[in-house]
Image (cartoon, rainbow, N blue to C red; front, side, top):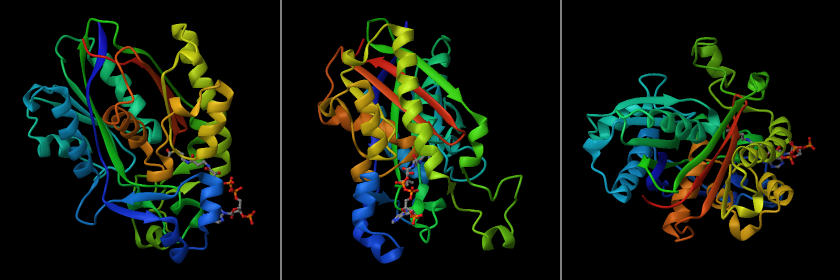
Length: 328
Ligand code: ACO
């Protein structure tokens, strides 16, 4: 028995924020952003919407593509760093919007690695006969926690959501390996200090801008380039698969330079790599499922293809998933 992707979906806000517009907002330049990050534009969620709305839209597409009915969902997992509220879980809002009354629902918080964590948790649930279909969503409204006066962070992020319906299969297709890791010593490099139990929201936290994402970009950059290769190598060692066997590589989309370094070290060519960071920026937990859903939509996957997804994020968390594409 393997956990199998039955259907993918994604949702992206319509509003485009390009580098030229950012030049008008903060002290930055289109040239710097493109040279240092590869990002040309990103999507920003409408004021009337929130994370669960994007998650809901991505889920509808994934459910439709999976061929199952909403009533058949047993579990909904939302991976997000930008939940609608501290509680209840964003997954509960998604359950309500879908009317998926037979599904339990909870969130996972693992920053940009959230979708990999979510898939891994779903895979374990699917070992139990009580869980037949699990919906895993990576969804973010990162723009809500970005300081648009801070050029070192605001140019990097965008909003979006991707969703996967997982079920069980008996064929070769399905999830072959998952690998997760965390280095809690890196909590200080990427965090949202205000509004939680350590620094509850107050006039002071607002004035100090503690409700905005804080990031030590250089530390994350160093960690990211190293860990992307390490996670891939771990998965190769677990499965006997080699880098040259990979048909589609979906690395976390935070910076084109990090993606290129990983591709170079592993000798994975451009045509086998999904790049969305140029168009959508870093959508945190949504990057991988949006990338996979777009690949499916564009017909880039055929039965039997090997897909490697690798991510890193706040925590510092990291992880990867290797799967063989196909249906049962
Ligand atoms: N526009 C113009 N100049 C800028 C900008 C900007 N938007 N941002 C920074 N600079 C300046 C800096 O102030 C600095 O100026 P100085 O030399 O006068 O001090 C100069 O550019 C170089 O700064 P660096 O930080 O060294 O720039 P670098 O090339 O390292 O790029 C970046 C910074 C893009 C943030 C890079 O470090 C990076 O991508 N890091 C990884 C970030 C990441 O992956 N985050 C997501 C983690 S996952 C999650 O869970 C959300």
